[in-house]
Image (cartoon, rainbow, N blue to C red; front, side):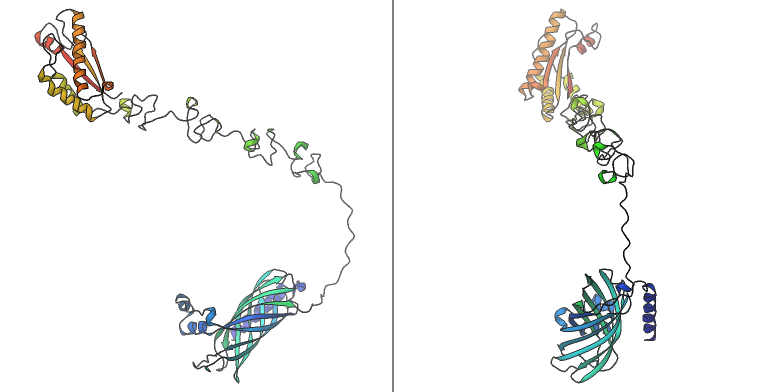
Length: 448
């Protein structure tokens, strides 16, 4: 108790010194009416365990478990930050004594206290938290008790004539006839008297002569008509400057040092992607492109990393090394080469021999497994006979292979045949072995 009293006295002295020059904001005599709630349950929970445990276990009393009542109070300011406050409250309840006994039914509990309120701010502020400590007495069914009220509250200043007061106290018993409990209140208080000011009333000084019209920035436009009184400007923009001369005053210009257009608030037409094509003409304003595609990048329809202008297979994903077309595997190439070496004709004729069917069927199967593959069929002869006759024979033999594959379901659009006669030998026509090698049909797979 001695430590608490010492702290309260120190705070009173400190606030009295700090606010000794603020006497006009001392609380006027005030009378208030309040709704109150007595909460014995929460106090019991804290004392039986601890504040932390009560919070964790949600043992605080609910409003419906509290005892309501009414109270009146009187407040008189002492200093700008300290007030005297006295409260009288009454409520009907079944009072729980310290020894755990009750009267068994509701009776009137009267409590009165006298306290000192220490406010964080003086009455010149709208909201001021405060602490409160004092001494109080109670009466319940012939039992008199004493307690110490200690708590905190909030005062809301309503035009210096009325106040909203919210208060919560912990009432500590001094006698055995009182018990620990919380006392919560909310109410309104109004000023019932005015404190006389001690400050002398001074006569107001005579008004100074009106100053000449000011022109702070010296641009010839007086400040009262100057929209930019601190910066030299021009009359066209009510005294505001237009540094870049684009017709947008600097105060409205988002690019004041770069000539722009009004619709972009003084900035140039933007080029978001920096490709040299402004956004108004750029169909892909957020992606660098080229003028011939209206600001969009050169398209890559098959998304294989080779743009359509360089892609020989623009609709078929491929690889850069093969100009955007898929690579033909070594295994497929081998199957085609084997098949080409096993295509045979009747001597001097374009009629296919039956032993060619197996190889050509394998070619047809391979072509039907990959609908994107294309095949060039090239016919060649040796130099036996006349060149003109050899040219015709090579064309007919290539066509015969073309027709066979078409009958096997290979689309004609994917096949092309041509004859080259004796003009492209791969061996020496002077030997029988060389002439045999030169009489051939070449099969060339590709995607483009």
